Length: 407
Image (cartoon, rainbow, N blue to C red; front, top):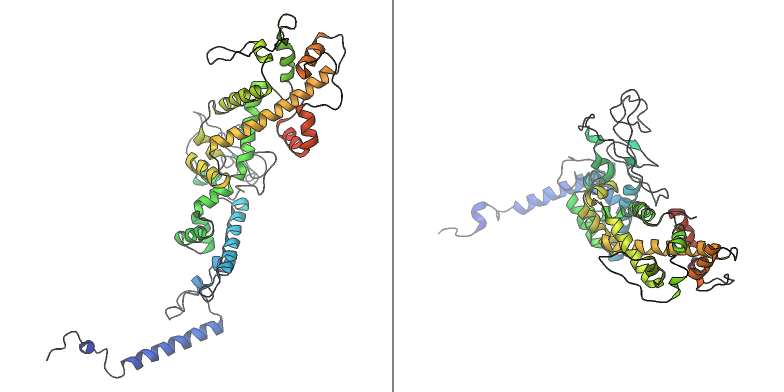
């Protein structure tokens, strides 16, 4: 008679086989208890499941509290609290962490001076276009970049007379982007797949998207710098465009008093009388469009993304959608609207100051008509945009004045 599919031919059902397994299990449990009692850690303690104390006591488990012993019995609320601590730890490392060269890559919070990208001038005495940073005074020729502000690194000067090859620590992308996902995984003692699984469990984002989202804080100061340059190119400092309104609107006599329809065309420039007959809403919409066009003129997305700490323009756009819920173009237009609003406020302030001047001055008469459509001097309470902002949005006005200046 054959055994067929019986397991007796392998000896699995012979007497004493299960007792042998029980003896091995008892030895394993005794060894595990001894290791825990002695506080031994490290890999290779001799028994499977016991020698992985390094994995059981990994840093990410100590941060979250999700240990192997308690993970199975943790509630959803406790697990979420642990993942929140992990995300906060990653945010702190991104904002205050160091890059491969040891320089601070990102300043914590929102730096008020903004991100400055000044070109580096060659050192006297032959430095091949390199400027020494804070920690390079004793290194001789420097490290190939300079530090602008606190923890901000700027690009080196490019020239046909200087070499393009540099050490890895001096490359632009590692210096601008800061810490990588793999660097965090090594410190947390976790694999990238496991870390991505935990961040997706917490907020639905991969760890790379989470890190890019924390860098969006740097975007505001860099965008303010672009807006300030574009607005000053169009209208000068806030308030100075009021002089063009009083003098540039002028035609023969007071010909712009008639409320005629302003002529606007894609192919012909507006005349001064067209500007004078323009309603405030039309003026605001026109200037917003002009600022958005100037903001995108000669704009290189990939270069700008690298300067604000992103590896590519696509990741920058994705971070804007993830964090702010708006595309980069929509964000630029919203910031342009706020900039134009501040410029109009500053111009109303200057027009009011001029309109309160001497009655015998023709410029004062024009300012009065543009300011309030009247030949009389303005009287309190003033109803211009600057007065409204002073009364209702004082904090916003002070911050915009600090960012864009004022006459």
